[in-house]
Image (cartoon, rainbow, N blue to C red; front, side, top):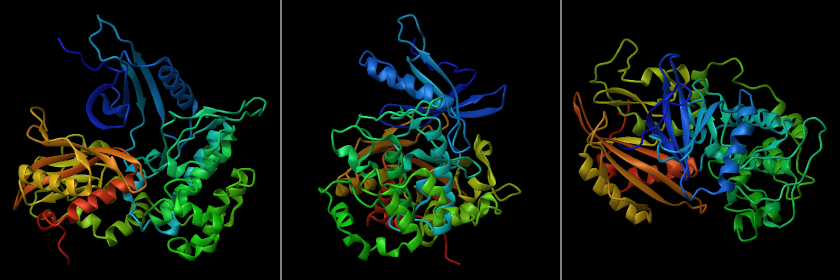
Length: 468
């Protein structure tokens, strides 16, 4: 008899919804409590080292102690040890709040970014969450777009404390320097290039500076903060400020970004100075507006670029409910004004399905033919892939699934899955294609999505919303 997944603190693992390099994420349901959460599973194998176990134990210990509206809620954790007599997959099972709004940066148009007010709205939440983390004596050390999620109300949630470190005693305020080198190159501070111990808080402040720049312009300012990067060298000399996109930034926000990106950590802005800065301290334009209005503003540049016309083409011939939506399965679980405004529901021939990824499209070809054309496109881009496999059972039976991976322009690894599902409803027939990112920058993943749908052999078959 094969192994199975255990019930974790009353929650049953239902379906895989994501995964990174070392973990898999499932949707988990507690029927008695009518509650849906995410379960992060990190497998335990004979190759798992004691250091890896200690790192996971630290992540659980730290994350479970952090309680703030801008931090993804940690609910519970169970460890299943390897055993010949056990019927369950060995591993760490972490129950977490489910981020129904998906990735914040999945909603950002590459090389365009979001408007000033939207960036202000979400950066305030990022800084509020990070300030609390630092007050608790913790340094995150891995702030980057893929660790910024949204809940069903559109609230920003900081997640993934796998690289965090405790640097301060809350009782006394005594701090220590850190020495471990970690993080993703476009977001790490330049002092990590040396072998010297470093102060904790300035590391996270630097990461926030890169994130704010990325929100506003749709790309990171450089691939790494060293002289090996021409873009970073131009920043050091000041030459970049005459060029796009730097010269498109307003004076106030530019002073905030450069203050957080001061090369000298001793001169870098402190959290107190960030809160007092003119750009951040002004009232939010969204304070009295609902989640729907925020979702509209968040995605306005995606709409202008035509991305939402592809993610949600016309389906007028379909039968719908009284709200104009066809609902299926667990889609109602994730429904809110914010997620509906973000169009995080895809029409399938069985009804409406919750898909928190806007990197999707419909095509007027069958799955097999479309898969061949996508493989041709990936080959031309230098992206590696495994031949598609067919799902044999369950409600996704017949779906083709293809794993892909590679490196983006910033030399960051990405991994993910392309799913191709036969689609026939009303007057439409063809394939629903969903690109699900497991690892890497959400903006780079969106760039790959755009490249696939614009590939000459694919583009003529992509369904779009009709212009009015």
